[in-house]
Length: 539
Image (cartoon, rainbow, N blue to C red):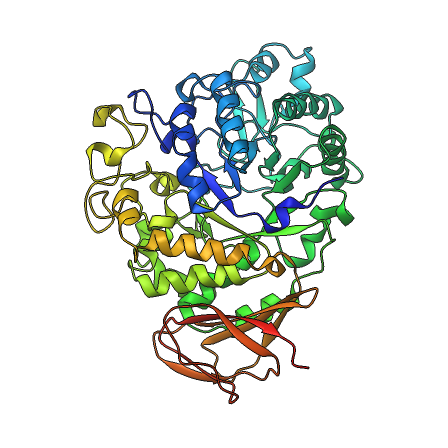
């Protein structure tokens, strides 16, 4: 039985090929990441989510997989991975790896066999049609980059279905042979000692795909079967799903505790940024109180940014335009007619007070918080890079060649390091911030430490107070008599609010020193101010 360790995990998203290069070939690798584990342990993270590191043509940041049971040679060897895994475990850090089960690369041996031989069992791993339907039930996930979900293959003489890029043919999980393949793959990595998997594109994996052969009576049985297999192999392993949707659609992915353990909270993220853009917490407060109940075994994974676009699909068009105006005023900052391809720090214009408020709010919400590599130092983005690659630049370790990421010539780097402007590595890097006690990095370490001291934040029980100021979100999270109240001013104007609470309050985290609390229950907050309080019931 799982220990529910993930309920209070501090998650850190890590792209190995852009973290640390150990051999000077321009690609980050597992030996390089091994050398940075002490940094991650000191930061306070407890679980790393590793983006795909499998052999791949790397046309989609490794999400186009050629071999699910190997390590891309540019990242090192399987032994290097095992050494990294052991090093993480020594430091109390768990490892989730990305499982890209929705699709393969078109270079995968399964697909190559499928296109050559219609009698091969691998042909039925994918979805084919002699002619695509006149009107598909699906639209490409990447509008503008792809115009259709059907692509013609000359070798097969037929069209195949792909919900993502055309070089990523979708798999048919209604086929039990496909599910059996992935059970073998999951077992391979569990036997090596990983602590679980991030399941990529979970809703797309189980939905019908314009073909009767892809229909199953109960689609979620596909994920339940996967979960049951993982639990049977490793009872303490966790499954984190990439599942977007409306709140009433999300509980199905928890499956009464028999399906996914965690879900990325895309819905909350939409309304966090709408609140930041409006500088008004009213809608966010309603969203927090209307979230569906989830099983005891379930947990939300909350984030401000991941390493894809900031997807604003759950907002109305008018709401999305409000967020665009605040954080992506130029068309080049937007993507796929629904999102933003920028990192957090540049969206906030490098405003330290606003950045602190945003991360303080994230960490105070019920769920497990996620930070992606580089956000702890306020890294920027490179909008000259295509699509989502703008936020996938190398880690900035020091004010030295290539930001300390690699000794390779610039032309050999997996992606250019940000070397100019306000967010260039000369101004934003780990080494400088480690030396500065007032740096954003050291502030983030303190935030993570305080978060760990308040395990009640791992519960979903959240109460929102009415403090008479729409700019302020005031909420309380409770667990077994341990309560935490947090106030966040989303505006740049100082405000004083009244909080109707009778408990004794102890300041746990604040943006500045405040006078000792009195009994008036009036609380001052500067622009973008935040305060956390532990509460003790009066006797």
